[in-house]
Amino acid sequence: MNLLTRKLSLASLALAWVFSYAALAQSAPVQEPQPASTHKWALVLHGGAGVIARSSMSLEAEANYRAGLKEALTAAADVLDKGGSSLDAVESAIKLLEDNPLFNAGRGAVFAADGTNQLDAAIMDGETMRAGAVADVQRTRHPISLARAVMEQSPHVMLIGSGADDFAAHVHLEQVLPAFFFTERRWQELVRQLEKDGSPIPPRPTGAPAPPPKPIAALERPDTHKYGTVGVVALDRHGNIAAGTSTGGTTAKRWNRVGDSPIIGAGTYASNQSCAVSATGTGEYFIRLTVARTICALVQYKGMSLQDAVDEVVQKDLSAIHGDGGVVALTPDGQLAWSFNTPGMFRAKLKEGGTPQISLYREEP
Image (tube, rainbow, N blue to C red):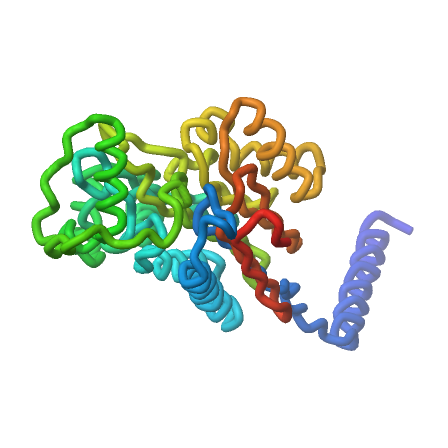
């Protein structure tokens, strides 16, 4: 066989193979694209930690707190049950808590020593690990929505003070007069604390209602919300998690103090590779331990269960340096957890298809 004949023969074989393969491909059944796996949604939230004991809480106050937690839990669950994102669920629940004067966030936040409400918030997306945070906000109705706007509509992670409020107005978030956040019981808490400290009492905020003829009766002990904060972690049906936290800080704080809530990795953190965490407590200690990120690192790198990880950090590490407070957390595979070393923590959780669990006291599950 000469060279030309050999080349023609090889070419014929190759052509025959191509036609045979094409025929086989045409006869093979068409593979339909497989739908993405569906996760069951879940969420956990908190409304602050502190001296929360049955002996320090009136029946009326207990019922009101449980109702407030249930309202926020239901709002987030409705978002998730309709296929909404974990970010939307977190924001919707926290906005309700910010508007509820029982909680130390938004309307009902504690007062700083100068008589202002200085609001902090943060939110983080576990899928993309984008985050947004704000501190010392005084004119934006919903700091959590402002934190999300920072994440989604700016190149930054954190804005503070008047600049944060200016940005909120720029992106058309609702602005209010500072007196909008005023509540009489929080003002009286400030007055009592400043009197105890021997510090001057600032003028009553402009636009605040006239003072009552006598001090209002306290619903609970003054230190019930000593470290009050609200926070939510959520898992959606797409398997993405998110975390958000909002707070008024601590009563009679000075010099524009900022705690852990708006600090990514300290009071707020979320990553689909590990977990989502929202914290409440003595912010200075949570910052030093980077509590939220440390919990997620134990899950991601040491393979610890979520409950073991939150207990390791809160019950051991935090307690060892005399820090107090608690966390709520969840993972993309549906583990839910909370842990706190205070007498109580306002908290609630719910899994898709399950029953809501709302707890206040340490002895409750």
